[in-house]
Amino acid sequence: MRECRVRPRSWPSRRPWALRLVALLATAALLAALGVAWLNVRGEAPLAPAGTAVTEPASTAVVARGAYLAQAGNCKACHTSASGADFAGGHGIETPFGTVYGSNITPDAETGLGSWSSGEFWRAMHHGRSKNGRLLYPAFPYPSLTNVTREDSDALYAYLRTVPPVRQPNTPHALDFPYNTQAALAVWRALFFRPGGLTTDARQSAEWNRGRYLVDGLGHCAACHSGRNFLGGPGWNAEFAGGLMPGAAWYAPSLADPREAGLQEWPRAESVRLLKDGMSRQGAVGGPMAEVVYGSTQHLSEADLDAMVQYLASVPVQVRQAPPIEPAAASVMAQGGKVYTQHCASCHGKEGQGVPGIYPALAGNRAVTLHSPNNVVQFIRKGGFAPSTAGHPQPFGMPPFGHVLDEAEVSAVATYVRQSWGNAAPPVSRLNVLQVK
Image (tube, rainbow, N blue to C red; front, side, top):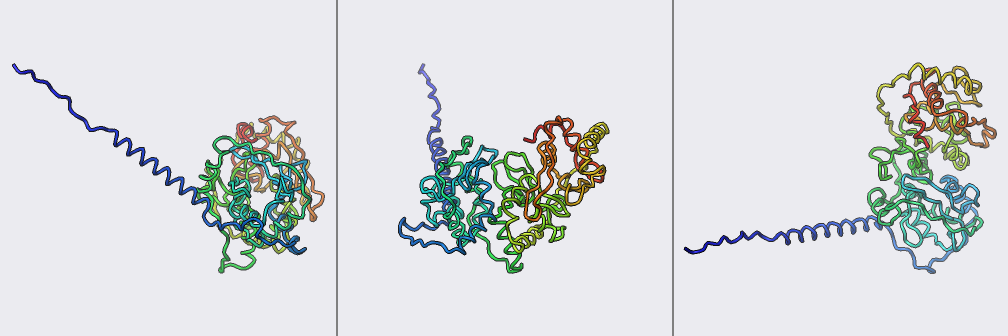
């Protein structure tokens, strides 16, 4: 009998398919890398070769204009440490990804901008790229500064060349991996940054267009007053809609919601006064906004402030759809009322009416009833201090109570203020207080 052998079935090799898949993935990665690289250089004109540009001393008028623009951008705030020389860098800016430190922008040749050309400075402002070609982190708000004109960039550069040079090396950023890599930054820029500029809107007045230029350019208001996604990029339809500031300590209220910080329903004169003096009949500034008024807006002309208010008052209204407000427990309101009577009523009044021009009213105060409780918790724990301005040189401050009140008392009095005298806002829990840094 013949032996019958069954030959094993011959299966087609899978190796070619695996190689094709690897090749396909490698090609896709290469194309993505090329796309990211292109997106990071689009629109950039080549710089003039070193030594070819003829530089002449800027006129007094140009330098004065640059000084004004530096105040409009509040440049000193981020480029000056608490105990350091003006514009010498070292100020830490907290972000969800680590700390970014402001650079030295004095004209020191080795550690500052002394060796920079006006073209390199313009590239940093407009494209977010340093002198050596490295990409800059958007804590330097070039997504807004890209709207600044070359003429204003040159004036700002001319002014910075006149400030006293300070030899101070830049503090290295303290960012977590992979956010400390140029590759991650390139991907972020490809997703969220596009260099450009503002074109005049012929449908609007010259004043409105000037206001938009200041707000969306040097003022970089949207950098704080807009929502951010988990990558730190602008959220969908979130421009001017409010959001937590870097570090999550303060909430920048919505400029699109009249119930928060929107100016759509405010008298223009009162809005201008708030930006000029830090206080008006409609309210007072505090926290990070007090620093903005102190270092920037109080120094701007009435015409520019009026233009900014015109533009901000035209921001399309976006009202946050909040769920029904849950009344706080009677025990919490009783505890909060007791704390308020002991520590707050002597200044803000038994009915939260305040004292005009001295102590702000809490009844009907939209800063108290913001969606986020962060700011009211910060004011209670750390105090509230309006800026000293020419129009309001000796403002009254609120002392801190963080060393006197525990978390339960802070949450109770915050809740009491947010739900008394006609105010309506969600209660503040102890967890909310603990989450505020």
